[in-house]
Image 1 (cartoon, rainbow, N blue to C red):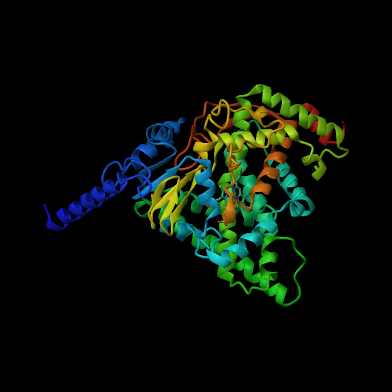
Image 2 (tube, rainbow, N blue to C red):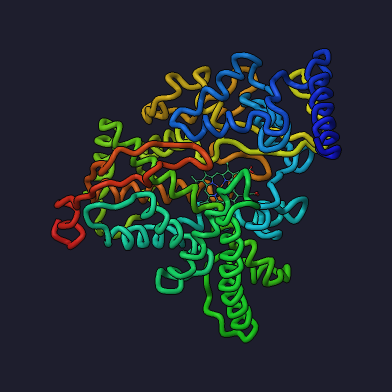
Length: 483
Ligand code: HEM
């Protein structure tokens, strides 16, 4: 055996031995119990194979049963403490920037761009997070975005005939909505060519754990350059128009960035916009698709939802205009939205790096370690949700979600929390509600093929959820003004 290889293996074994010693130190100064798995790969392969199946739960269930809700494992090249405990998850989320820091692999950072909100830290992050939050708040959605959301959903649906891949359609809708919100472009040739490159960028995010050996990743980096160039041109033109006093007043994110008085460079603005485009794309489109999948598999819920929306449609004077008050009168829809978020867990949890030794629940997590706050484990825990693994929207009737007895900590966190709380949380809810309104009032549908839900590298259905849609007669008559 080559000497350098022998030394490397020896060093790796020694490191694992010392980790083992730390794992078995007396309570109070020791890591949460667990198993580091094989040298170097740890338990990564077990995790991937569990999450590539329709039932990933045993990966966490088995470890929680053996070690408790805080356990140590080794995944994606690093020892990591997993938390299936809502109080610890809250502690991790709330202490972002103080005791914990978000941490993405270099391959992801390159795709996001160094000025993206997801990578920002400290005061700049605070400021830009609040700017983004204020841009997606309910009064902006009510006064500016709702009309566009509804119009663009209807526009995309208008092209549907018989068989569609729902996930693809939802992605088109989401992309069009985000481009409109960020830069005021309506769907057209420019947005479509941007989307083609953008889709290649997105594929790059899912080449974990070996991006650097992947042709898909290299293609994604090239596509990112093209998308950034296209966005750069838009930013330059808008900046020029503003400087020359020729800019039409626009209520989009780009205007907010140009007007903020912070003299952001073009590169900063492009990275920022691109990251927003990424953050809302897979998440919102997947939740739209899965809401329909779960409803299709739960006919009673679909019937109740349709009844709620048929009533709204019968009440409103113009069936093509959905107003804020209509959105606010969809109680069962909100139950469906919550339950879809709970069961689907699009963002199953978040990774953070520990910036100083942490003492939590009687254990110590050393500085530099990774933690994973699993939302999924908590959302699917029978202790907090009866029959937790069943889609049951009625559980949300007159109920805003369970809390931990004693501490009152909120158990339901599909959008995270603390300083990095998702700035798109309200927007995602509105988009999903309007989409459901248009879907159930306009169409009936049936699955065209059996499709399976998987969870790695992201939550998705394997075949992009093919369905056959049929226009409901009552709906097309109403929209032509006949009923
Ligand atoms: C169902 C849809 C969505 C889900 C489940 C979701 C979930 C999340 C979660 C859990 C986080 C926290 C990540 C962390 O703590 O590291 C997050 C962050 C973020 N989300 Fe969303 N999101 C959704 C839709 C959106 C939309 C529509 C937008 C954009 C308009 C958006 C923009 C962002 C951004 C920019 C961040 C990073 C915030 C920061 O690091 O300060 N999300 N999202």
